[in-house]
Length: 317
Ligand SMILES: NC(=O)CC[C@H](N)C(=O)O
Figure 1 (spheres, protein in one colour):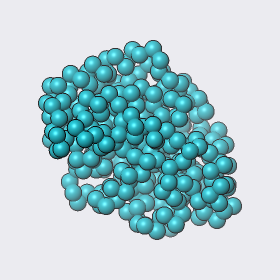
Figure 2 (cartoon, protein in one colour; figure 1 turned 90 degrees about the vertical axis):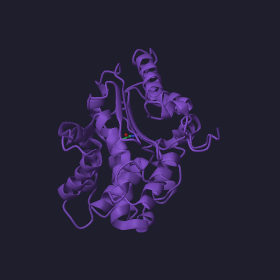
Figure 3 (cartoon, helix red, strand yellow; figure 1 turned 135 degrees about the vertical axis):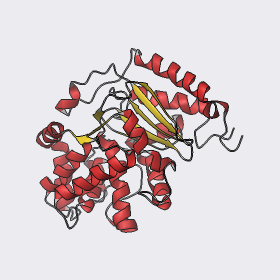
Figure 4 (cartoon, protein in one colour; figure 1 turned 30 degrees about the vertical axis):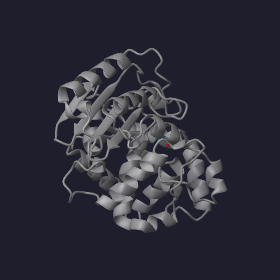
């Protein structure tokens, strides 16, 4: 089969049955990974939650489990800020940040030093801080933040999306690793604003709260499921998807590509936004993380869905 017309993907009942089976099983799975505990607000999230939502190319959406429970999107926000930055500055962005995968943790300081202050990609923390700093150029931080929130709301088609102020503030107080990255960027001449302004904006974008229903809708532009003239050009969608595939799960990106086989962006809140270009936009949430800081059960759900629907871009059957 060459067109992706697989039985499960094209048969809504079969797809619902498969996803119901996956979600019911994973909701009670004993081995759930570990919630992020370096951000105080995330440390107390109940790991026994699991939600999934999928938007398909015929306009339908299916929701499972805790799909309507809000969670902190954290680094999933980096896909949206990259889209905004590419739209505003185009290829010039790549003077400040690279496009290569990383082999160290998402908050690695050593990578940044080795690369002389040019982050390896826009999805590791240092790279995302640079992207946000770029978006802030020529305006007040609150205006940049307003654009980020506007973008997410527009992509999701839902104005009831907000920032968890308390979470943003707590990360500002406890996020010492990010402070060290920002100061290193500043000392390398790769941060235009003062560290507290760029980081303040970055912590706020990470603290956006969404549920799976909203996040799956917000990913439609990356799957080519929204109106063509909307938000982001198709060439930028192609760039973002390539980076989500190669860097969206940090040093676990190779593993994600091997097991799931389509682009995705994770966050330490346990959310993953994943897209099957031309076919589906999927949001999955389970707060427990694997060793790379990506949702453990969320990855398993996407892997099982990918196998059942033959959705890996590397599949030939
Ligand atoms: N991987 C993540 O989701 C990390 C985001 C988190 N706000 C941080 O900066 O550490």
